Image (tube, rainbow, N blue to C red; front, side):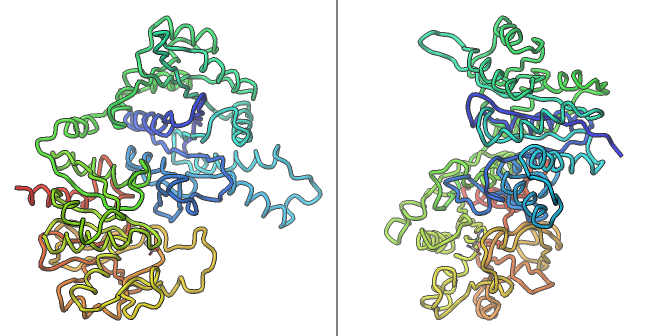
Amino acid sequence: MIKPKYIFVTGGVSSSLGKGIISASLAKLLQARGFSVTIQKLDPYINVDPGTLNPYEHGECYVTEDGAETDLDLGHYERFLNVPTSQANNITTGRIYQSVIEKERRGDYLGQTVQVIPHITDEIKYRIKLLGNTGKYDFVITEIGGTVGDIESLPYIEAVRQMKWEPGTSCLVIHLTLVPFLAAAGELKTKPTQHSVKTLLESGVQPDIIVCRTERHLSQSLREKISLFCNVSPSSVIESIDAETIYEVPLLMRDEKLDQEVLRKLNIQAEKEPDLKSWEEFLFKFKHPSSEVNIGLVGKYIELKDAYKSIVESFIHAGAANDCKVNIIRIHSESINDHTVDSRLKDLDGILVAPGFGSRGIDGKISAIRYAREHKIPFLGICLGMQCAVVEFARNMLNMAGAHSTEMDKRTPYPVIDIMEAQKKISGMGGTMRLGSYPCQIVKGTLTHTVYGKLQITERHRHRYEFNNKFLQDFEAKGMIASGINTKDGLVEIMELRDHPWFIGIQFHPEYKSTVACPHPLFVGLVRASKESRI
Ligand code: GLN
C-alpha cells in the first residue's frame, strides 16, 4: 500500500493557460522517473458531468473506460500517461452537491445544518482521497478548474487549505499564472502574478511552486522578483514558455526542473532521471515527417478548436507512426451538397466523418461519404459517421429511397439505424447513453482484422442508436459487411466495404484510446491508406 502525495494545480490571472497540460507534463515526468501517478480534474460548474453540455460550451466530451462522460483534459492525461482514467478522475460541483443532498435526504446528517464548510468541503476531500486511498499511486495530481478568485472555486481552494494542514497528509500546491509581455513597455509584467498569489493567500493557501506562462523567457531578476513578492524560492519559479506543440511541454518542464523541484519540496529522493527516450523519438518523428497527407475532417463543429480534440490528437499520433504530416482539412458538413462535393473534397487523400447528434449537416455528411465510396478515397466514419455511411449505402446501393436513422426521421420507410432496445424506455438525458468500454469480436480475414492485427478488441462507446440487424443480409449481399460484432447482444460495431481499398465505419470512438505510446490502429491505418492513395 503506497502512501500518496497530493499535488494541487491551481490557476490565476486568466483561464486557458494550460493547467491540464502542465498537470499532464508533470505527471509524465514523474512517471518517467518510475513513480505511479494519476491526475484528477475538479470542475466548478453545477452540471453533474459535461455529458449534457454542447461543444460550444465545453468542447469535446471525453469518455472513460468505465463510461464516465468527462472533461477533455482527461484525454490529455491518458494520451500523455497511457494509463486509463475513470469516473473518479473528474468531479464537478454538481456531483459533489448531488451526493451531499442525497446523504441529507437519507438522513445521514440528521440534526445537523448542512453547510459548505464542513459538508461540501468534506465531500471534496473525500473525492480527492478516493484515488489516493486505492494504494496504487505515489502521486495524485488534482487540477482545480477555473481561476482563483472565482466564487465557484472557493470551496475547492478551501478543501486544499484544509488538506495542507491535515497531520500526516503530504500536499503541495502549484499555481499557474500568466506573465504578460506588454509591447508598449517592452517588458514582461509580474503584477498579475503577484495579485493572483495574493488572492490565493486570502483563502489561506500559499503556493509552493509558481509556474509562469509566458511568451518570452523569464530573466533571473524577474524570477527573483516573483520569488520575493510571492514567498517562494527562486528555484520554485518555473517558466512555461509557449510551445510549438503540447507534446513539447514535458521536455520544457524537465529543462525547467519542475519535477526535481516537486520532489525536493516533498523530501523525496529521486533515484533516477526521467527516461523520456520514446517520448523524444515520437516528438522527433512528429517534427520531421518525410511525407504528408491531406485528410478531410467533415463535421458540424469545425470552427470550434476543441470540439474534435481527441480526433485531432489521434491524427498526430498516427502521423508520427507513419512518418507523415497529417494536414487536417476541416470541412463544414453544411457546406457540402451534390454541387459542391467535388470541389470541396477533390484534393483529399482521406476522409473522416465525425461523430455527432441531430440532423444539422447530415446531408453533407452523406454526400461526402458517397464521394469517398465512389472515388475509392480512404474513409473512416466514427459513430454518427458510421451511421451516415450505412444510410448512404442503403439509399444509393440498396435502392432504399428515404432510408435513414430514426434519430433524424422517425417515419423513414427503411430505419437502417434505429434506437437501441435498451434505450427505448429511458427519458433522462444525463449519463443514459450506451457509454464506456464494450468488447467486440472482429471477423477473420476482413480489412478490420488486418488493421487491428487481432480478433478481440474493446472500444469506448457514446450513442443511443445502432445498426438495424433486420437489414444486415441486404447490406452484406451488396458488399457492405459487418466486420466487428458484440457477440453478447449481436450489435454491429464495425462495417466495412468489400470493394474499396479502405472504408471502415465504427459505432464506437477509437479517438478516446489513442495515446502517444499506443497510437490507435484505425487512425494509423487510415493515415497509411491515405499516404498510399496519394502515390
Ligand atoms: N447521434 C448518434 C447516436 O446517438 C451518434 C452519436 C455519436 O456520434 N457519438 O447514436
